[in-house]
View (cartoon, rainbow, N blue to C red):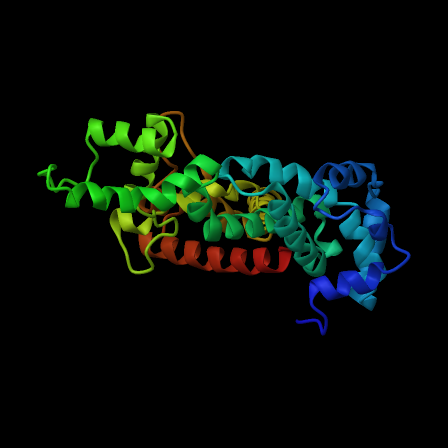
Length: 313
């Protein structure tokens, strides 16, 4: 389902002009912004549920604004974990705020998950997208010295190759060339070596190849996120655990004594030596029927249990 307003426009409409949002300094003054965000009050569970239901049921944009404001500190906290990529802190926060607004827009209070857990996934997703689009260009040249190297290294390398006194066509720089460049550009020779390595290394494909297999089917993007804490996966895991305990018990109670024992022996029993329960032939001998008949009873019992579990879920 889509809304008529974009998250940014919707939020601005909800908060202007009397909202506490108007009291926040712009991101250009980063320290003041962070200080102001940390002073914003956090919502209790009851308040969060109330505002989320108003947004879901009535499209209450004022409630959406309050949900966003109370979680801005989460964006600031998360953004600090990605400062090592060399990207501006304010840009990371801005991208995270977009993710937060998307999370508020999609949040369902009836799922039994706090907004802070649900929003974290969306905040990280927006920051990851921003990093993937920008980190290579920024990482190549960040400081003034690196920018000087970036724009002069290639032309100076070409000049070395064209020099009649240098009879070499190697791509890498010699020790003498490194010293000459460092002296000319007034930078350290270590910086020349580092920039040479960065420029010659090329870009790395962070996403796996869509048609790749083996090593090409896996990319470093996997290291950027922790899927084990993704809210949807946590909910699915809890649901599986619930069905594996309470659900299985309820389904077994719906079977007759013979069917229940066959299922328990064939699927649930584990002996001390690690082996399973009785075989079809063992059960057939006990009940004085054929092994095929035991198999038929087992299949019928499993179908009945699946119906009970489907309704139980």
